[in-house]
Length: 468
Ligand code: BGP
Image 1 (cartoon, rainbow, N blue to C red):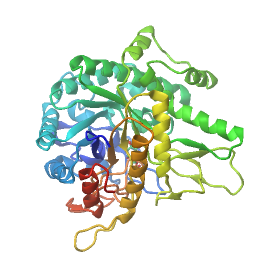
Image 2 (cartoon, rainbow, N blue to C red; image 1 turned 90 degrees about the vertical axis):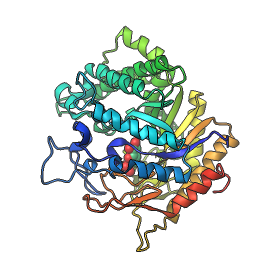
Image 3 (spheres, protein in one colour; image 1 turned 135 degrees about the vertical axis):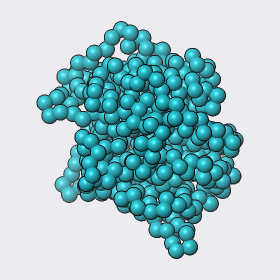
Image 4 (tube, protein in one colour; image 1 turned 120 degrees about the vertical axis):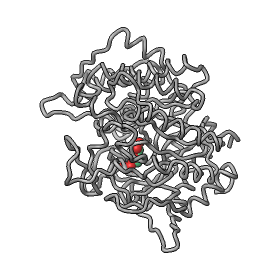
């Protein structure tokens, strides 16, 4: 591996910071999401109600523990840390005239701390978090006004942190909008609305906002590298029957219709046809088209948790659950405790697929295993299953780079310090190298404990992937 390869970990502000009202922070869309479980979906309540627990209010207390957490990252030898900035710390209501200095100061301190250890920040501007006020007052990304609000927020942070941050990601997984419109876009769709129309118009506004910010970031500092971030895992055909192959290929295109625009600067013919077929009529201005063209990204980052299988479902065959998406069950793969299928070779295929399509440097900004870890009485966690999962994925990643020639900037393991699950709101779905003593209801000391995988990953980074 290239000696500048960026090994590290990833988190999102809303899932780790907690302190949901500290420093004049405003309420975000995640602050009204209750906790859930494997069998119970998280609820979105209109306001904060006493009878529920809202896990993102506490996160893992990164807000209070950031120094200790960054020191732990440094101890593992992290070269980079993917994090996000909470929009609601900087513009509590989203449409405020002035930014909130307390919020800005918090990230000053985080970036200074990272600099101390030479850890490169990779910053997502909006990771499943936006001011609740923008949802209530403007209907969220339905409204074109959001483009300006996001632009103002981005301008404030791109300027303020221009000496600290080189790598930016505009939005986390816009393409998840199709499956869970609330997460990336704060959308709650009314029964009498045309779902597709709402979703794709909102996505279009996000794409325009993203492109404007890419251009702005380049204007502020031509050395800035700005990426898109997409949810993706390659789709396999159920059999070699041409209909199955077609279905799988169409599913790949469906997933990538959004990042296509961010990479190429225009909608693909396939995507426009889908809109037509779904009776979607987008309001796209000439100015929008110009903005999209001038705001193409420098790199393509993505989350990879699993591959998917598409095709004719046969009797008795099951669906495999996944990260917001479901496909047919792949009989050649095992699943984690939440039913997500584990496919390391799929990562190599995905890397090749994305590079062949985009010819841009890639960045794996999420990959990892959620599991119910057990903290032993001596303060350790024996997570050999996580080591096994990561080892297999990293091996395939290295093959994609060394044998297939895929240019890859880095790898950030998702949830490097245990945090709140986005999908289920649980704490017990743990991804980290570091265990955080907190349960699904917010009880616990929030103390940190190094897991076995902590020491393993340290060696991986030290040896630049030679010792796995
Ligand atoms: C990704 C999101 C993350 C993260 C991850 C794991 O799609 O970008 O925020 O949460 O999925 O999902 P979960 O937390 O539901 O296990």
